[in-house]
Image 1: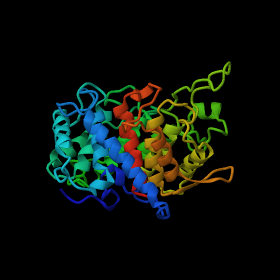
Image 2: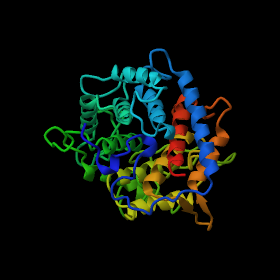
Image 3: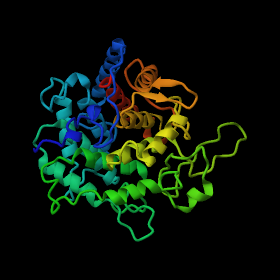
Length: 391
């Protein structure tokens, strides 16, 4: 396999380098070395619990959704204790080999990696996991999976708000930001594969269309001319992101008797997804669209909930927070009230406080499968690995 490009050299997800041109000062090491040891202990416990949950056939949780298994694989490959060891060079790799074989069994004739629907979602997450193996024997599978994802980028008729984005399936009726960030992550990390510079075989991402889609998901009137932005623009929403152009998840009332907040409001997971997507699309860290997203995140900084959504999607929120802020290159968050917080220490402490004695995590709120402790634990481990590598 041809070496990865510099920005994708550390493909193990816990060690992803910032996307190219997202230039920020290097993140300094924290003086609290004991925290790093605590974080590694938490990761060790969680990975041991995950290994105990693997099915004999090699998958985790749901045999029809290989993305769940791929997230666990990525969490295992991202373990700082592995020091980047490829598949087969760690004594605990027997389960990972079974997981690899299960994911390989999900490869379809069109190059996608899926079984029953959600083909783009599954393929994107599986491609990241297979890249993290670094074993050099999957080149053809990786290249075909990459081309499958590229083929799913939407190119709708003029005026289609989903144009440039990615949906759950190639023929899905709408694109959304959650699938788009997974797709852009997979394409970013696979950009150095042999053959990816051959436009006849690999047309590459339509970056202009992708950025235009991202703009249509952002509450930023100067860049987003969609009618809903002008009609529903609220200073509290400025710079944040929604799930898809013209459609957002509604948050529950925040107090008894209070009306349900209107749709199209900015919220946490999607704003971190938007920030990370812009960086994957090669926007600079000081681009106004990027800084507007970061400003919204500063104004809404919290680890108690997914801002705008309460506890729904909380562990996905932690996962995206760690990836996005690591890629953006910041260590401290200077909040509007003057407080400065080290997000790495803050996030690590919060996650460790939520971890069960057996090593797992789970959300009491069942939206987006987060009552499944395997999924919530994979998200949490990946987030902690980003933290551990920056302590």
